[in-house]
Length: 330
Image (cartoon, rainbow, N blue to C red):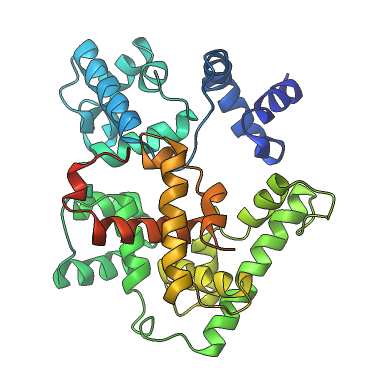
C-alpha cells in the first residue's frame, strides 16, 4: 500500500510525505527493507558527502559484481549506453545477479544516491582536467545544435554529462564575472525567496519556528534557507550568473543577515572562534569529517550556515596542518 510505504519511509526520510508516488514506490522496493535492517543494527540512514569508508565499500561492491558477472569494466556496467553492442548482455547480467542489491550492500543511504556516487567515481570522463578553449567553443556549438541534451553531447565530447552541463552554465555568458551589482543581488534574493516559499507551501510548513519549538526544530527550519536549493532554477532567474556563483553569493548574503552585518573571524573574537571550533570537533570523537553534523557545530563559530563552518575548517586544515592530505580526521 502506497500510504503505508510513505509513512514507513518518513521514519528514515522526513520529506517522504512530499515525494512523488513514483519515488515512494522505488524507495519502498529498493530501500525500505535495507533501512529497517540498518535500524536494527543501530545505524542511521545518511545523506550528504560520502565518507572514505563508504567510498571503499562502494568500490568493493563494484569490483565484486564485475568479478561475479564477467563484465570487464565499471564503465561498461554503469554506462552501458556507450557500448551498444554489449548493452543487452549487460542489462541481462545486472538483472540476473541483482545489481541493485549488490551495489548498495553495507551502505546506509538511499539506493539512488549510491548509484549516482558510483557513476561519478567510475566515469573516466570525470577525470580529464580543465576544459581547453577549443572544448569550450565546441560545447557552445553542440549546445546550439542539440539544446540541453547533455547525455548526447557528453558522448560527442568524451566528458561526463554533469561536467558539461556545469561548464556550459559557467561559460554561456560573458557577463557573469566581477563584483555583483545591487540589481543582481536583489534578483538573487528574490529568486531564493520564491523557491523557499514554494517549498514551504508544498510542505504545508511555516517559514519560522515558533517560540515553543525546540532548538532542533529551529535548526531544521534554518537549513531550508541554504540546503538542497534548486540552483539551476535560481541561476535562470538571476540571468547573469551561473549556479555556483549564485550559491556562494547567497551564503554570503545569508551569513551577513544572520549576524546582522557583524564580521566574523576577525581579531580576538575570530581567534577564539577558531579555538572553539577545534575543541568542538575534537569532542565529537568521529573518524571521518563526513560524520560530523555541521549544523550542530555552527554555534561554536556563530550564527552561520553549516557550509560556512565547513569552509573555515577546511581553511584551518590546509593552512595549519602539515601534510594534511595524508592524515585521517581523527
